[in-house]
Image 1 (spheres, rainbow, N blue to C red):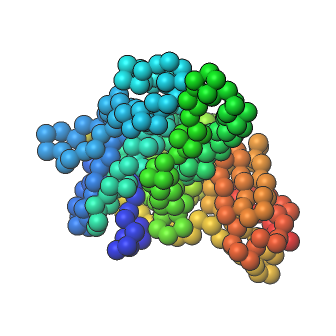
Image 2: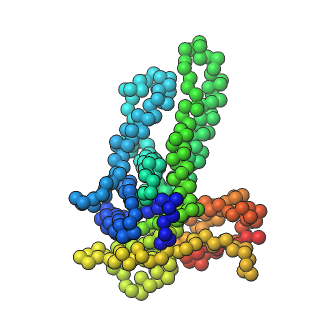
Length: 357
């Protein structure tokens, strides 16, 4: 683990299948931070972290209360729209979280953006995410920041602006108050918060360290590549992996060679796995290598778990778009590579090598 920069707060992420794994991993990280004299703020996006009576303060994402706060913040902007529909803003209820697909994920992403914005100077952030499937959704959303939200929303706002112009002549006749599309645009404050967190997750300044805990049986081994690759495909290649499992030594050695990650295998028992030694193991120094040498012009990306089957690589002007197993990773090209074309792609686990000319 590289020394923390004085100017860039550390961002530590905990992702695990079950609450007990999240608790053990959080405690292990807190112990390490205490040894390093780091002031760490804890954010619990999973909302099930229980560290006991002596727990440090935790910012817990209580989703109903947070949704209510967001709804109250939106009410002034929504009032003219509700009046148009002959509804009262004060009497209207916020949508039920489960009634809108993806709303829970968006709310947790906004909560983390708010916590990152409010992080005190000199502090670092330890974030406990929900189980892997939703954690990946949150991270994919946050990495793309406001661009994704606005990309989905702006076509509708553009349509309303055009429609409003066409209806302008009827406003006085029909006594309508047609609100403007600008009232529903992402506010500058939220845009700034999302952009700051997206920039931190981009890994360009100081890597984001993630620990991943998976519950595994021998029968699960064929599915492990996809589960491990999910975080690197969110841009988190500085990853430590704990498999809570009993596996033969031969299988452990094979997985260790295949992924080349700090790997811990063992069940949580009375003595438990050696988290301290595992957390002290070095992480990969450079997960993206841009090379021009005797072997050609190529890019090597550290993507443990990613396989050949179903892999798609597209070169879109100034970035590479990598798709695999339903996930996508955008990799910006260096300035002096924008005129080159990506001609080949091959997997040499755990690396993806792309050739340019």
